[in-house]
Amino acid sequence: MTTPLTASVLIVGGGPCGLMLANELGRRGVSAILIDEKPGTAFNPQANATQARTMEHYRRLGFADEIRRAGLPGDYPTDVAYFTRYTTYELARFQLPSATRAVEMVKGLSGSWSAAELPHRVSQKFVEAILRRHAEQLAGIQLHYGHRLMGYVVDDDGVTADVERVSDGARMNVSAAFLIGADGPRSLVRQSLGIAYGGSTGVQRDFMGGRMLAVYLRSPGFYASVPHAQAWMYVCFNRDRRAFMASVNGRDEFAFHTQLRPGEDESAITAADAKAAFQRACGTAIPCEVLSHLTWTAGHALVAEIMQRGRVFLGGDAAHLFTPTGGLGYNTAIEDAVNLGWKLASVVKGISPVALLDSYAAERRPVALRNTDFARRFADSLGLFAAVPEIEDPTEAGAEARRVAGAYLEQHGRAEFNIPGITFGGRYDSSPIIVSDGTRPPPDAANVYVPSACPGGRAPHAWLEQGVSLYDLFGFEWTLLRFEGGDVDDDQLREAAAALRADVKIVTLPRALRDLYEADLALIRPDQIVTWRGSASQAGMLGPVLAQALGHGAGA
Image (cartoon, rainbow, N blue to C red):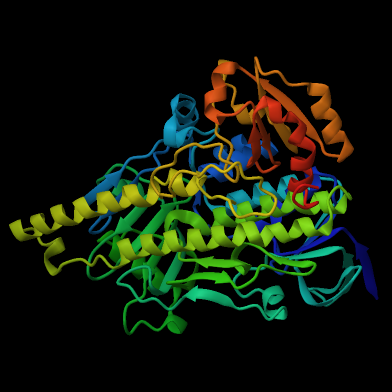
């Protein structure tokens, strides 16, 4: 027997991208079925850094505080520290705030870090569990872990997919209007479309290039054995065993990754070998229990040649594959889901024509190319910097080698982990649904972000009285910002939105904030991107502008 199921969207892949998309759709009343071959969300820690922009999206959905409470204790430092080995010489440290301190700090920051949220260090396994729990609570969302896609056909009316339950081979026939392939780097959906990755792969480096061993381990005695202040990220720098390790729970669990050396056969690696690799990075035989181990390849900077074909779309690792420096892969995947979510909902509800969906690839693929390039540069900076032979020697030459390495690694740490420009600066300037005002955005730089309301970028943020974030005033869908003192007819604006069946919240802000947007009016998309800005005298343009932003074509 084959069970028939129907939904507006079929999501293949239950990682961060697929789960975030399910949340975006479900919050908008759009039905979706998600399938994933795994029995549940991730057991291994996987990605460990949630960037501030991702946290802002979690805040928009209402569970940023829950994410921030997950993983490390609230008072645990999130420093990035570099050592010859974990129990020997500390070379450099980039200090970062704990989760509790980040909540306090963000309300006093401006400039590059003017944001509703700061980054959070939390393992992906915890994030996925929270995303799943919230998705399961939404009407119209069905999550089917332990199910795999066997094949599908597309016609003018939608997609029909053959889905198999892994445990017993029971079949489901799923009918949907659209299919999203968020099924990882070996994506069956991408392969079925004949879409190849473009970019660079197979890059060899002294570190973060080539075969890597990932070890999820428990070591209750680690902190007591290490004569240094606690850190979130421990980086091991020597000629014998280069590695990085993230604290998972701040007590006894760690995600350890090390470069395999010439002659190490990945197919023959045992739990005992994984334990020995960890202990070599420690510099002493700290007891540990290996919970899991596997190998993976660093050295990728790949983006799918196209991200859409008709009713089928790619997101997350299926669309772009990173070497995980800067933590950019998971965060780019979340923004894929956010971008696609509101657009699919607008089309499914009949507010927008299907042509709106063409803007997904037009917007997200250039950002994927940008972000994979930034990640590649970070990997080069860390991985091509090799340790000299005397780096561990207790001599004057060794001390000088450690001083030189420490200076370099401190600079690298700031470059890789203080990245407001990457976090907030992705833009959609060439998008067909952005209405340009002829201005140019600030230069794109990794470590500096200049807030700008130039259409196509993230809406500039500000903290209001009583510590209220400007973003908390935005509507869940569209927001029109106007400023006190501007001569604008609100009824005219509401009529223009109603004519297009668009859910637009009008927010009036103090005149003092007008300089932030350099305009009397600013139209903000559901994903908090500035679509258009204009003067009070241009209020009559809202109808045509909103029509273009909804995919009806320029000047519609």
